[in-house]
Image (cartoon, rainbow over all chains, first blue to last red; front, side, top):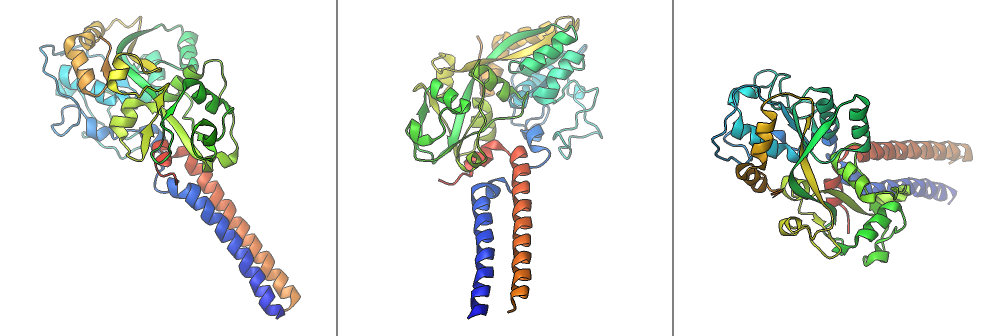
Length: 328
Length: 46
């Protein structure tokens, strides 16, 4: 009898550990397995699917009479704008201007691309991209508005950046498609991220803790989120929140076109869905501009040529057909 | 089973369980920092 009790006690302890780990696995680990690597946060886009001068590329191909041959501005940009500036390179630049280390494209590396240092096209994404444009390594950066740190870095080095709006984009919030919530007010979203609303039940959902997810500091979407929050600080969250129902943020094009994951859905804000039409007529509450950015002291004669083309009908058509909303 | 043997076995099970759980939690915390947020939210259980 005593031995039976002892064995039962051991089995019980093992069972408690197994149950606890199973819960962690179901709530967390299962959603992370095979879903991360050192490149995930840096790469963010399948660069190889949007290369210029590739007949199988997913970029938009527009016909134009403008073809640059010399003094090619080096173009760089954020992940979500890679298809746009790749299409610009494809339309305006000679094919030999884009080169790769080792002679051909490879994504078998940390950032998922291997553009050669002297290539007229680069992919540094937002954080490294802002540093590169300030340092003079690139000529035009396609990106969302900078973070406070990125602005301060330019000021520290005495560099003035010129921001030319070339298109519109919606800053969107998304949740799991099974979450019954469809709409939030702007104030409710701010309250969630401030930590003042912590359960979906309080905003018309089911009784479940909210997990407000943030992004890498300095990334385009996190900078947009910081701007959205304004003076309201993003609050901390409990460790248990990671097991709750999450809400995340991104730009519409990145979420809806580039990633297109059917298991998540965008939320309406103040009753307005972030459709292209609602971005264009600006009824969606958070419409942001994205920019072509260059150093004011950069005397490359083709920078204004490229900028003017981006704002022309041909350039705006390229932006529209790439999935964004034009500025004109 | 002698009490001493049982105590040793219980301690061993507890130690192994704690170590395995700690490793699991550390792995999950590290993966959470670097995962695709869209995929993470898409795989949520409802």
